[in-house]
Amino acid sequence: MPVRKKSKFEQWFSFSRHQRRFGADKVYAQLASVDIEKLKSDIIAGDQIQYTHGSAKDLNEHIEQLKHEFVGQPALSHYHASLIVLIRREVDVEENFEKFKALWMSERDFLLSTLNIRWLISACDTFLDLHDDVTLKATLMNAVVLINTLKLQETERYLCDQSLEINIEHQTRLQTERYPLFDGTSAFAVGTDDTLRNMRWRLDQICAVHPLGQLVIEIFDRLQHDENNNVYSRFKKRHTREKTRWW
Image (spheres, rainbow, N blue to C red):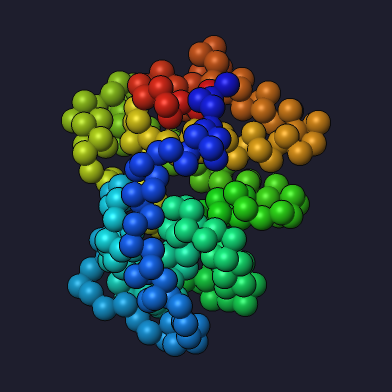
């Protein structure tokens, strides 16, 4: 089983968790009365797209840094990302999730045509965490599993040569900087990344809804076995951070 997810009570005592919400009032002031149509037509200025690697603890700084990911794109894309950040950092979650749902219901086609895979998957994760429609969650989980699997496979291609021997230079680079893969998606930070652990938590949650969901958990668990040599079992061997293990 993966590392146990902390309870809400345990999370409340985490200073870093509270710290990541500092400055929410200023962000709220900027997002209080948005004009969706204006955000769709306003284009974020800048010389080139720059993706974040990790995230600043200061909420305002992180949201400001995210603007660089959307250079040349509609401001609505950055607004969408800002809502996700507020939800992730547990700032008025119910209110911001309602805004998030309303945005997708009214601007679905626009968002689908402008957001890259990175942010489409972030949207899926957000619905998986908070939506009460089990059918929707079960559907969206497929996208998350698909992309996370490809993320591992493509990272392995970068990390190793044809013999699957690790390239030490590439391994070090993955721990110190963001390595882009495709359409806004970045490589797996081998040994420490929490992507698969978070995916496993969401998989456990959705599969617990129905007794037959255990079929999925069984299949996923078998992928981690050494004798079933595959990209999951190989990355399991390379993983070193206990708190982010996914098996």
